[in-house]
Amino acid sequence: MIAVLLATPDVATESEIVSVAPHCGLRVLRRCVDATDLFAAAACDPDALVVVSAGLPRLAPDVLDRVRAGRRSMVVGLADDAAAVERLRRLGLDVILVVGPSAEDTARALHDVAQRRSDPASPGAAGVWSTGVWGGAGPAEQTGRDAACAVPRAESGSLVAVWGATGAPGRTTVAIGVAEALAESGRSVCLVDADTYGPSVTVALGLLEDASGLVVACRHADNGSLSSGSLRAAASRVRERWYVLGGVGRPDRWAELRPGALERVWDVCREAFDVTVVDVGFCIEDDDSGAWSRRRNAAAVGALSTADHVLAVADATALGAARLAAAWPAVVRASGSAQLTVVQNRSRGRGVELRHEWRRALVDFGVTARVHAVPRDDRAASSCWQQGRSMGESARRSPLRRSLADVAAALVSG
Image 1 (cartoon, rainbow, N blue to C red):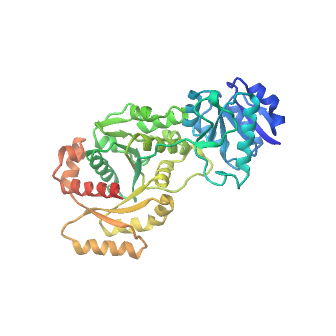
Image 2: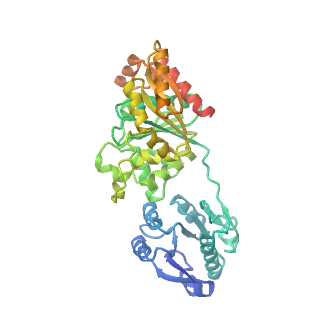
Image 3: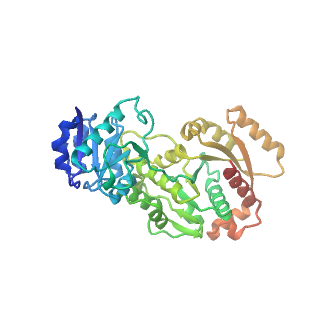
């Protein structure tokens, strides 16, 4: 018998499912009335299969993340209509089952899911479970026993994380310049300020936000209401195809940037935009020391781990190279399989030999990523910051702007 925690109070056939469960190889340990009840029951039995519905009171992605912690790797959603399926998808459920024509069909489908989870030889059990719906197009056509089919995820967009070591190497200037160049190339772009140590993107662009766009997006993720539309509504529009999600400057707001919510924000950013550029803080230490809700570095660590490209910005000085080299092993670990590029910022055009020496020093320290030199243009950069405008608005002829456009072009060309 497979132990089950049933948290589906809004499913009309829940009582019938409980009645037929023993005949289908299931043992319902508890019928939970809300998310708090579910969390307590899940903590008592970490091996039980958890089944939730979209209408469970207080259900949020953060609750599901905590329920999944430990030995439990999967939570199953049970839906009886298309709206419930969509809400469960937004909550980040592993597998979604559509209620079958009878309670017995539904119970047997739950049993099949549990067997797939526990049997390493079953298809999909050894890998990552994508969000899936069992059966055909609608509840009326379900048998409850059909094979699981993955719902396609529209992740056509790419994510670029812009990181730099301590010492103000110019990562925000690089992030803004790259985002603007991508938008001018005809792509839809979202620039996210995920620097919890010194957020400054909205200040640099002269934008006013009543509330942090990133916090609003994370709240939508927690409520299961995050979509391409709600994400765009939370962002400030700079131009027709360029949006900005402002950052968090107050320490008491870090708790709202939870890893689970941020992961869903990155996923929806990929769906909503061609390219997402994330400006992250310098510190990428994993400071998860039990206070899981107050991780200041969660945004930076999460963005690097999910990024397709990482731009590591370093000042074109000996100190800049030393700081980059010292942090490089941590960057490589955090970024996983992302493509790494070093941006040698504030490089002087006359010092060709010095640039070569700077690169050779990085190679000696094990930094083997390609290096893109970006020239120093203090006049253009200072003018843009003082006016709250981008380089495309007030410094179009700047060599700095042209060089950042080359960096952007290299990103999209692979």
